[in-house]
Image (cartoon, rainbow over all chains, first blue to last red; front, side):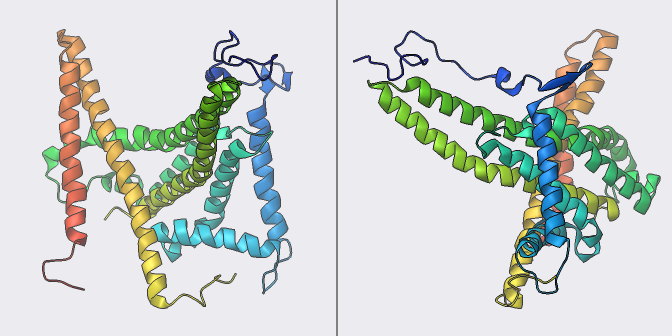
Length: 265
Length: 96
């Protein structure tokens, strides 16, 4: 039986090839253009994510009460979660002045990530690497500035290589340390976030499209059910990945700030 | 700002949670630093090997440089993080 459920749709056994998702699913037609500047969906989502964070914390702490209620309660839980799980383990109590930065960073990344799972929005902004690099540069320049401020330029570079290392080893290690610090540390910070969100979105798209494509009144129905189950599984997995990636990015930011403020042990 | 849920937590439980969070942060940093060292070692000495190889017309120096860099990175990782772990590990018979 090769009946096709939706005769107009592209399904298995209808002579239509699988419309495989790819890079084209990450390119959006611009909403409007001003000269060479094109305003696209990821840009709109990034602005939306920033607005969500700003409006949420503004609403939560606009008139703070000693005994928190409603939005303030939620806002405090959010801030304390970042403080106790991300900031304090890396920076201790002395790092509390960086809490506003880390809270903003964490929730901005998390909201951008979680947009992947919200119907109609359904696109993770960090899966376009151009949105990740500015965050990486902000973090990178912050910890570079803090390092120079607290340890001095020479002291900061000196602290990269542990004390007690014989001087010939210094010469061998300098190229490795410089490349690690200036290239690979920021590179891995950005690429990990981008790669995870890119892969997650691609997987979700593959299994969703495959569920539709395999749908037919034949054995294809079984394949479609399997693909749909996998789509649900990836969806659940992505709810964790969106949170985890925001957590990892912010935790590493906190540890980099800590290594700038205090010399390596 | 108040600490939510602190009433139910005993000081020992809070200390345990704090230690777990610290371990998590340290583990993340160590993992990604080690990964960055491996890449940086290969890129640095692979690059040096490539430059020298270009000058003396021996292309083999590029992969040789990468392997040397990988070796240097692994040695340095063992020196730096192995020592760090040995320092934090309790001595034999120390049951604290």
